[in-house]
Amino acid sequence: MIQRQVNSSVEYINAKPTDGVTQVLNLTTSGGSGGGDTFTITPNAALKAALGYSGTATAAIAYNAAAADVQAALVALCGAGTFVCTGGALPTQVVITCAGTAAGLTIGNFSTTNSGGVTSTITTATAGVTGSFRNWVGDAGLKVVNRADGTVYENYGTVTVTAWRPLDGVNPVV
Image: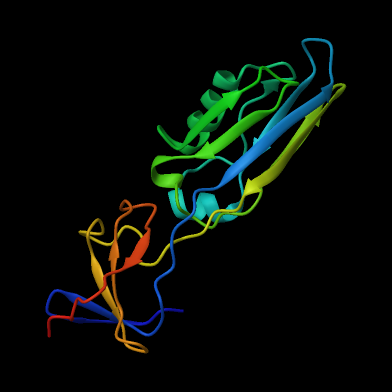
């Protein structure tokens, strides 16, 4: 856990800041051949807690859905701009990338519930990591100082997906 202390316009922390990583999931299906062959996706409880949406699972998704249909189901549940889906149509793999307010969070895997003859599987391709100072006001360009070694770091990422780099020869302003 990074502890912070604000002194003027500089953040002081007790460790190197953590970069944010956007979660990427792979969705595949097998089986299925008719209109009753559907599945739903249930995001991890951590995502629900972070985004504050009220549902628990997507509406039914067809076993042979296009990536756009999977994205529409996830966005209907979690909110606009939260996911980008590419690839597909199923059973060809659909890649689900967290975006917007869902980007740069530690959220774990999603689960699926199958109906009819379809089997759907979601696996994590890239695990999400919540970066240090995510959503901190003025995050882009924010500078922090590691008390342990005096290194000054700057966020060159975004407000939701932080990316930290050390700044050589920079002394903190106190």
